[in-house]
Amino acid sequence: MNYQGSPDFTHQQADKIGVLITNLGTPDAPTPKALHKYLKEFLGDPRVVEVPRLIWWFALNGVILRIRPRRSAKSYAKVFTEEGSPLLFHTRHQAHALQQHFAAHGRDNLIVDFAMRYGSPSLPDVLESMFRRGVRKLLVLPLYPQYSGSTAASTFDAISADFTKRRWIPDLRFVSHYHDYAPFIAAAAKRIEAHWAEHGRADKLLFSYHGIPLRYLHAGDPYHCECYKTSRLIAEKLGLKESEYITTFQSRFGREEWLKPYTDATLKAFPEQGVKSVQVFCPGFSADCLETIEEIAEENKEYFIHAGGERYEYITALNDRPEHIEALASLVLDNVQGWGVAHDEERVARAAARGANS
Image: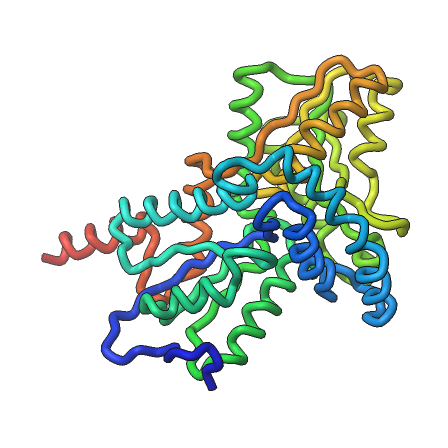
């Protein structure tokens, strides 16, 4: 049954294939009120914080939401622009660029849109819009290269929950990860090479990923392994030796142990180890956001320089760079096979075969 108030399926409407890219989310404004709403939704997700619900409810509502919104609002105020938060406008630009890419290649039956797991634009609202536009087959692509239950699985939960409220649901495909997808690895390597061409190399290249609690790894979450594989593949693409790069984890929260080594602790220790210059790239972030701009580019730079480092550079995320859009487009086409959409190479081959047989 449809609880949305309008039909999910409209008869005699041309069928379309929907491509929904998603990301974590962002507050609507850099204010304590907006942060309170956003953090309550985000930290209230049992996929994000795996703590007994009653205990966590008291901790979240009795302590965290009384303190953190005001503190986080100050951080977001530093990165907000006229277009909103960086994560919001970068994801919007990615969706627009992906739609343009498909249009330029004659794929008018693909409709691209974006949504946030928490905050706006919400998954239910965007799904409703896509279905009204004739989407009958849906590919969901969370922009998390490395899988974690706290990110990709949470997105799947939200999609599934929305579908329980609909009379009709589309054919569904879901990309759970793409940490070792060759075009993505090539795009990341090309981004680093472009930075090197302009600024030269540093003593060490540091790959920083968002952390998760260590117990998630022990419970079977593959995130840790996929992060290390991504780093290794990018390093191999760049021709780096093991001594020339390192993988670390940032943004830990609370008192329990998270994945190590920690990014901040590593940077603080580098100067004493003889590493005087460092470049940081975040392969787990498809778009620049608070964690890359404020935490990596600014806060961690201060740690390194204060500890005796001399040169620190943050290499910006892939965002809507052409090589990233091409990689995402290729990933989409790989995952919609059988839905009447073929790669360019296949279309050329088919055209050639038709010409040979005519």
